[in-house]
Image (cartoon, rainbow, N blue to C red; front, side):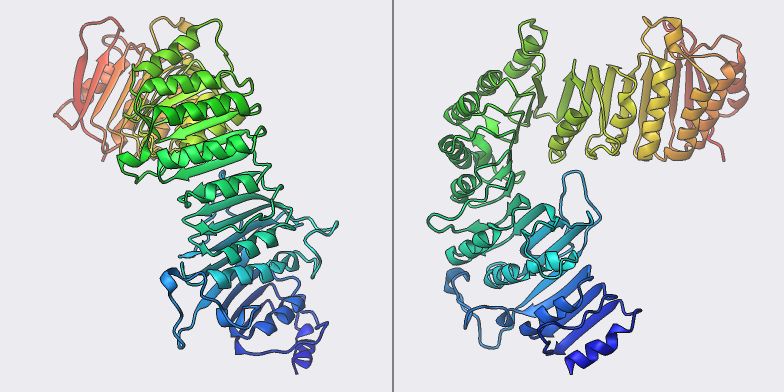
Length: 609
């Protein structure tokens, strides 16, 4: 009957979605194919039906299935090995595991997966032969459904190649193009048996290059197989004993990103394992202390830091980037020693120390300043430090697009960063830079013009900008474009200053530039309170009148300062403001004609209705 039904459906080309519930279907060995079906939904369907159903819909791209895990086991009965504290399942208890396979277009810079599901599970992100991102998600209840999840994953991994049109081939077939695959294990407590089964199933999955484990515990058997094709490991809140197994079973890792639960316990384990495995090929190392840890859990001793420094100095010949975040040293001298160890690694180009117990003007800051000014120092090694006050200073750096993206990506998880200062630097940003929405204030001086648009567009939460410009006609349009890209809705204070030392051709701006800034204020700054323009010369005072009119449209604006902007006593701007200052209003405008003048004229005007 199933075959007859399927033959009838073959001619229905408008059939796009197939839903099956509370049913059992028996398929012949080679069932008719329904090529028009792209979405499959099923619940409470017998497990033997799935293979036939999936084989008959080779063009499916979206699968949503709920399975009673009693139907999924390859054994005669489910064991209780993975249930906590000897817990067993009641006879009348049903446990459903949810499977979802669908295209995943929202690829972010850090490839963060948002499955849209609650609870734990196994997530497989891969790219099929059409270069479409696909997401396979299996969810269950933590501490209860892990055995069913692993059983289903081993059986259902075929979905990845059925979905791509390979219709049942091997993942290792020469004609198959799965690539860029990532597996994420979330909130799973896996027994030795289940860990072994999952790990063994991955040995043939050679496109797997990124493994992520979070809030989970895996019990590895003796002599488990290695996964030499995995090059990146991300681990967050993982049982400490798992680090040794994970690092030893992934021999070709080049990138590790670990969020630890106990710095003094976990970092020595990580260091010891990396030393034993002689991990020479590591390129990126990131160690972050979980943000909610109490102080005694994120502190590390001098011995721990020295061991890490010694590992870097002696065993990492290819290391390019090191990032420590919220790992608190008892003495800044320990971080000075770490930086000195890193200087021996010729390939190392970036060190990031974020909230590691340092202060502005402390030992580390003085040491870095000394290295920066020394003619003998390694100029290609950049040390970025966010002190405990949440301020980051970038000084005298020339960063490529790749290096800027790496730096910004490293800062994304550091939400305490609120003030960014950049001076004497050039930063190149990619077209869609990673965003740092928690940065509230930007201070910059002597920054290359081309840096501003990418820089400002990566800081959508800015409220206060204080920029000293090098070339008014070049810099201000870039600043305006960057603020326009982010919307500028959060801005409350803008300060644009041209230093008196600039030649006249560098501090002058055209009418188009001033009007572009005015249009931004008029259309996009909903919360702007104050603007200060100093040393920027307009060619015609009428341009300043236009800027004032734009500020009058910003209902929240309370103060405007123009200092040395090419205005004159009795000029067009003064005449215009005097005509408006007939009755005191909430908007205060101050005009100081010369930079060195001791007096500023003040006016009280009202906003535009």
